[in-house]
Image (tube, rainbow, N blue to C red; front, side, top):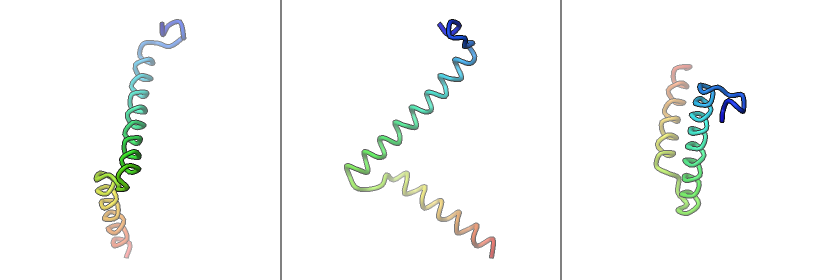
Length: 65
């Protein structure tokens, strides 16, 4: 089937892997958005990432001074 489209087997595997990660990312973001809409709170993972990012920003600002 892939040969009829002019795509080799290796290229097909790469495309399918990329498609897997795109769908995984979209589902993850959709679940996060639905959680936020239902509960009105941010997911725990997002809060943790924001705190870590603030810490990194503060560290880089301290290094500049």
